[in-house]
Image (tube, rainbow, N blue to C red):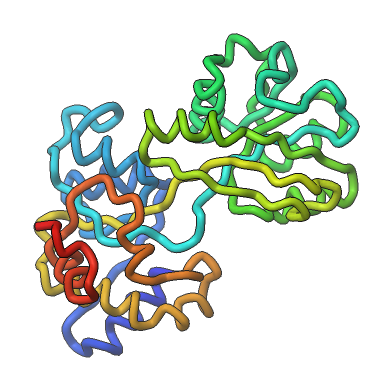
Length: 283
């Protein structure tokens, strides 16, 4: 929806110049592969993916390197890691308390987030008890029926699922802790700290420190400079209109656009950020 709106705005701002085909995908990894292989011109992905794809490392080993560039970091905090247990569970009050406990997580990216949370405490999944892979709905149900003791899920806070769970069942949000988050960011710079204020969920009155990673709009390096410049300018000049279309566009501005960038900027994006007084020392 958001990128359809951006495409419409580009058409109105530069009539006759641009035509975009917006395609659905399975997520960050596929978007990165499509960009690296020249099958798309733009794509969104998690910030960790930008670095791996740019360097052709990990899941992208053997693919063309240095094919993608940074266009703009998305607004919003990104999907915030939330570790949840029952409000009635007195035995889990910190991440180390998860040792030996029955834990739930969805497969894929969420399992990777769990590894990173545990890494920050020099723990691994071997320290936990039984680990069960479930959908988000099933995670909430499993916590209520006692099949699991706690679970992890990454989503912007507040989450409707967790708001409902807090109202009907009662939850405890586990503080990951500033020291642990700082350690994680030092090793994995695509993350940033995110505070979850007390009162975000009913019954959770304490502030909690967690972390997230931004989503990034990237472009292939060979997309014309003028095209990317016009795209970034259109996004920034129409921030209010984009927010009206999708809440994830709230806070769109040039400063957020450069937040946390880990790979080189596309020349068109760099031109825009220079124009508005940012990144003057970056060439």
